[in-house]
Image 1: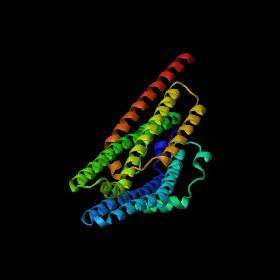
Image 2 (image 1 turned 120 degrees about the vertical axis):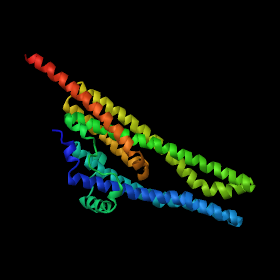
Image 3 (image 1 turned 180 degrees about the vertical axis):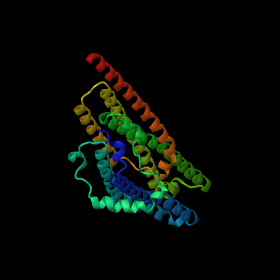
Image 4 (image 1 turned 30 degrees about the vertical axis):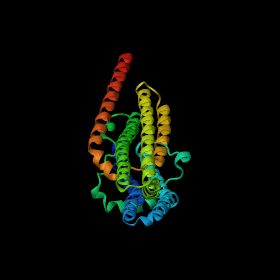
Length: 312
């Protein structure tokens, strides 16, 4: 029985979505501190050095300190938050899409106290974000569960991939801008090679490394998601061509394992990017889901007609 559209809007599931969004938001704040320390903070240090060149050695030291803080404190903290958010979202998906829980991939269920605590925090600023209801397109209620869940999994992968590709392009533009600015300033100030390394390259290294790392990770994440979307489309074809319910459920669980792993590993995307792209992407996603549903309905009707003829 397909209860996706009703189950996803129950209070229990909306709290889980709120909790995972809060955890992701906290992880993004931690990431924001990484960016601040490696870019804004370094830029301030750079401006100080332009005024007092004798402090150039300290600028290089600051760059090293920022790298260590990122590796030892901020990075692991962000990872823990992201893993918890992915685990809560996995509970949501398993119950809404009627999939069995995978102890091997997902581990133990997240504590209900964590969900309650984080959803309460989110309620204080939820009005600034898009609503959580109708997480999956309501179009999927028109088709059987075994087919509907594949459409939902496909939309998950498509949405995430699209926003990451757009975000990656923005990152590389900013990165090139930083490099060009640094080179122009170095030439304008008449820096020697050693000055350029100590005053510009070393202080800006954390920002450049972070930007390059983020760009690479976003592109890799988008590529993985595209492959998962292709798998979902293959499962969709299998479903329409009469594969058994047991086989389709097994395939959906395997695909969900990869979606969970992707959520744990993928780099974060800031909420402002999500809100900027949401309206146009949501419209595209709903339209493509509606097309899939129409295709499935037509296939089901044809099978029913063929079955009725054989009975007659």
